[in-house]
Length: 264
Image 1 (cartoon, rainbow, N blue to C red):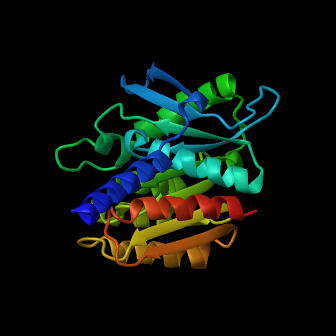
Image 2 (cartoon, rainbow, N blue to C red):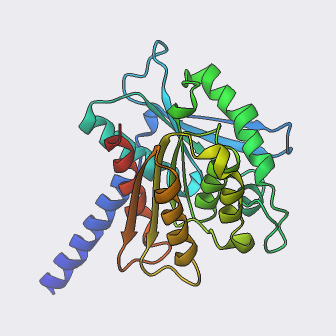
C-alpha cells in the first residue's frame, strides 16, 4: 500500500513538473488583438519578451502558429536557449486563430474550407509585422524573422518559403502536411525555384517516424529539393523515431529551436 501511494505521488509530481516546464512566465507576456481589414477576422496575439527587454534594441522575431497549443512551449524553449547562449534579442510572437485555422493555413480548399492562406499571409505582412515593428521594436529585415508551424502550420511555413520569400528568412516546419492539394507546395517550389534559390536563411524540417497516411513521402521529397537546390540555406532535419504526428511535435519544436540558436 505504501509503495502504491509513493508511486502515485511520484507520478503526480512528474506531471506537475512537466506541465510547469511547458509554461512560460506570464510576467514577460504581452497580449493584444486586432481585427484585420484584409479578411475581417480578429486575431489574438501573444508576445513573449526577453529578459531585460529594452526599447533601445531591435529584436529578432519568431512567429509561432497555433498559438493556443504551442506558444508557451516554444517561448519557454527560446528562453532556455537564450539563457544558454546569453542572447536576449528574440521576441516570440504567438498568432491565435482568426478564421478557421485550415482556412488561414491552407492555400487550397479542403474539407469544406475555402483555403485563404494568401489572405492570411497578407495579414501577417501588412498588419501584424508593422505592429510588431512599431510597438515592440521588432527588426524589419527579412533575415530577422522566423516562422514556426506544425502540420497545417508547417504547410503554411513551406508555402511562405515558395510563394512569399520576402516575409520570412527562416523556417521551422514540423510535420508539414505537404500532401494537401496534390502536393501544391512542391508544385509551387518548382515553378518559383529560379527566383528563390539565390536566397539565404535557415530551414529546419522535421517529422515523426510513425506519421500517418501519406505524410512522409512528400516531406522526404521536399528535404531532397532543399538539399539540392537551396545551398544558401543552413539546413537541419530530424526524424523523431517511434513517434507519430502529434507525439513528435514537442520534441521537434525543441530540436527546431536548438537548430535556430546553433546556426550562424
